[in-house]
Each structure stands twice: as structure tokens, then as C-alpha cells.
Amino acid sequence: MGLLDPTPPPYDPLAWEQAPFSERARQACQAWAIQGYGTPIPVYLVYAFKLAFYVGMWAVFCSFTPGLGDLRNISQWWLEPVAFQKAIVWSLLFEMLGFGCGSGPLTARYMPPVGGFLYFLRPGTTKLPLFEGIPLIGGPRRTVLDATLYATVMWLLIWTLISPAILREQLFALVILILLLGVVDKTLFLVARGEHYWTTLVVFAFAASMAGSEANPVAWIAGAKAVQLALWFWAGFSKLNHHFPAVVCVMTSNSPFTRFRWLRERMYRSYPDDLRPSGLATLMAHAGTALELGVPLVLMFAPGGTMLVVGMVLMLMLHGYITSNVPMGVPIEWNVMVVYGAFALFWAHPEVTVLDVGPTPLAAFLLVMLVAVPLVGNLAPRAVSFLMAMRYYAGNWPYGVWLFRGDSYKKLAKLTKSSGWVPDQLALFYDRSTAVGLISKVVAFRMMHLHGRALPELLPKAVDDLEEYEYAEGEVVAGVVLGWNFGDGHLHADQLLRAVQAQCQFEAGELRCVFVEAQPLGRGTQAWRIVDAHSGLIEQGELSVAQMRARQPWEASNLAAGDADFGR
Image 1 (spheres, rainbow, N blue to C red):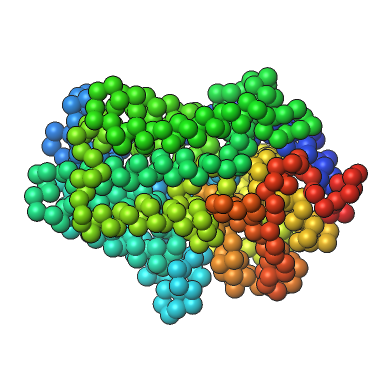
Image 2 (cartoon, one colour):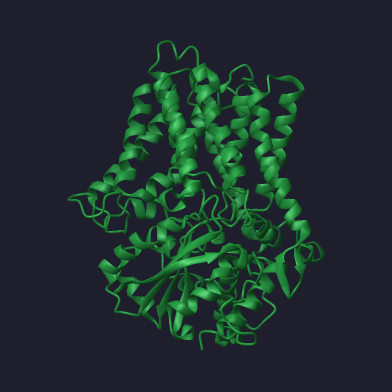
């Protein structure tokens, strides 16, 4: 093995590729349980260097404000209010350039390792407008106007960062223009982390419009605290389901710090034959949920002293665990920003509470963004992105699988994009056997989650002969076509399929998609749809979550015993 070679799977990838899908799924899932994705250690070092760049550039931008930015005396200024404000603005720029969540090889980006600006600055690339079909901004392809608007926001973010103080005019301009970006392309509002960074910018802007706010930052500190408390609370609340134990299994099997076979085997009931979460994994999931709910409850009411210290320790335990597992979406910088926010807001200003926002329009805005939107997102996940609903790491996400008959995926070459088909990207670094081995782990990643157990039942409904089709994760398709992906199955659902079909013109049966929606709060089922790019909706229905919990990732409940080789 070379330094950059992934851990080889315990099967011949080229022989694996020829096996029936159920057998491929079984082998890949059993391999994931012990190996994870098999990422070589140097890849993690790349992410570590990227994190150092993220923190270093924050210090550089802080240095434009007198008294800030000198790393030799960072302890004297790192908790200053303007340092936190610049951290939010820099994080927003970092994400919108494509350097943050969903970047690098852990998200199937090999060459180039980022999407972001390579797509958003390029007219002709595919986009998802909020209002499809309306003149000027409602088309499926990015126009010069779209690219210019994005470039304007990038320039405005940089101007704000190099200013000695953040001006209210800059804040209001950013709030409005980022909202407009979300209208012309919904993807960009999610890239900007609208539920966190954009909402916090709105808090800054509202507070700056109040008399005396520059001298007294209480209003925006209170509002920013409310945002961060909501992030923790809803992330914990969304884990009150049967999906999260499988997430713990998948993360533990993939973490660079838990490469112990004995530990990974104990995440499952009886490796290798029963890969349902073990009692240990379920206990860890419950403990993690309690921790994530406990952090906001403690910090919200901590007046200082011991209670505040306890809240900060719990917070560090939470984000230390998440970061050490290096989740596949690699939200490393986002986790660092949340930790820094805890210190800059709660540790530095324990005297400020969320009630200090007061009965203002800002309070009404925060109630909508931090209470109403996440609540709707849990009750009716089809209506709200899991990011806007703050349902992080919970495993209960919508997802999609795209099935291309034969080599019909080559029609995607008609699209304007900055990256090639993932196997073509891998061919730049690895031989075909290694590339197929990596792709097999992508299949396993989806099926190891609870919602992925729907696929053995749905794939045979989607196509008559599964072996004739190229299986592609919707996440991977979104990364190639849109230039960004971060676990939101809505990004690669019907609207993207319509945009791709308008440009590629697949024939009936050439491209079939399986879309599985998240489980609504209080319901025991998950909705699914099968859609043909040319013909439209083929079939839809609901699956029982309880039935999926009872079977292995590669099993289908509607098949007779011994008849597991579907798709033939």
C-alpha cells in the first residue's frame, strides 16, 4: 500500500462489482463495520491543515481592527465582540467559497477537492431557483446575473472582514444580498448556513440599527446566544428517534481514533451477521442525545461560576466527540466556530441572557427562525431542509439514489460543471480496482444507516434488472452537478432531476431515481417515491421504520427466505 492508498476491502473489488446487488451490499456493509471508508491518514492531515488555515485567516482579518489579530497576545483579544463578529463573517465566506462543509475526498471530491466558487462564479452551471420558471432568475442554469450577484457578495464579505469595524451598512447589505442569492439558487442559502451564520448576521444588523448598540452589544449578544442555544437544542431533539444509534455505529466504524477491531465489532449485535446497533451503541446514542440537550439547558440558565463551568465542559465533550469522529460531511470548521461561540458568548458574557433581546422585531424574527421553522421541519420534513430544521447528525435525513442504465451517465457531460464523474476523478489517483473498492464503501455508508435499509425493497421496484444500472448516491450527483452537497436529500430530488433532464434529455428508463423522505415526528413511516427522468412519477408509498429496524441492511422484507438475490 502507498501512503495515499485507502485500506483495501476484504474482497476483490472487480469480482464484487459482478456479484448480485444484495451480495455486494452485504460484503460492503460488513467491510464498513470494521474498516469504515478506509481513508488513508494523510487525508486527515489535509483537513487538519485546512483547519489551521481557517483559524489563521480569522486572526489575519481580526488584525485589521486595532488591538486584535496578534497571535502573541491572543489571550487578550480573542473574546472581544468584534472578533466574534469577524469569525461569523469569515465562516460565512469560507463556506460560500466551498472550503468548509462538504469539501475534499471524504465527500467524494477528489479533483478538484472543492466545488463552491468553481461553480457559483461560472455562468451555465446548474442551479435550483426558489421560483422555477419565472423570467430572468427561474431557469435551471446560472446566468451572468447570478454569477455577478455571488461575486458581489464575496467582495462585500471581504470588505467587511478588512474593515476596522463592521458597519451597519455592510451588515444590511449582506443580509439582503444573501437572501437574494437564496432566491436565485436555494443551494446558496444552505451553503451560507442560513440557519446559523445568516441568522446571526440578521441579529448583528438588527442590533446595529438600535440606538447606542455600538457601545452596548448586549442586544446582539443575546440574539447570538439564542441562535447557538437553538442549534444545540434542535440537534439534540432530532435525535429522539430510532435512527441515531445507527449513526453512532457508522461514525465509530469510520473514526480515525477508534481503529480497534474489538471496539468496532461491539458496535453491532453480532458481527458480521447482525449489523443492527448493539446495546452499547444504543447506550452511546442515548448518552449523546442527553449531552446535546443538556448543553443548552445548562448554559441558558448558567449565571456564572460552577454552573457555567459545567456547561462549558459538557459543550467541549460534545464537540470534541463529534470532531474526533470526523463525520463524512466534515463539518470541522463549523464545530470549531460553535465552540468558539460558546466561549465568546456564554463564557465571556454570562450576565447576558436571551431575554435581553427584548420585545422587538428581532425577537419575533428569532421565534420564527429558531422555533417555528425547526418545528415544522420535524413535523413535516418534506417542507424544510434538514439544515434549516437543525437536525444535524441525527440519521433521519432525506436521501436519493440515482440509477443510470448502462453508460447513460455519460449524458451528464452535456452539463456545465467543474468536476468529472467520480470514477473518472478517482482514475487520476488509483487503479480501477482501488476506485471500485472506494465506491463500494459509498454504497455501504448509505445502507448502514437505518433509512438505507429501505433500498433492498425499493431498488427492485425502480428497475427490472438492477445489474444493468450504475448506482450513484444522490449526494455524489449533487456534488458533481451543483458544486455542493452536505447531506440534504432535497438538493438532489425532483427539482434537480428536472434541471438535469432539461439539459441532458434522458430517454425513458435511462435514469430512475429513488427518493426517500425523512421520518416525521410522531409518525412510524418514511415516504418514498420512484421517479423516471423522462416519464415522471412511477410509484410512491411508505415504509415502516419498525420493519426496517428488524432486518439487516441488505435484506428486503417482501422477499421470501432464501430469495435475497433481487435485481437479477
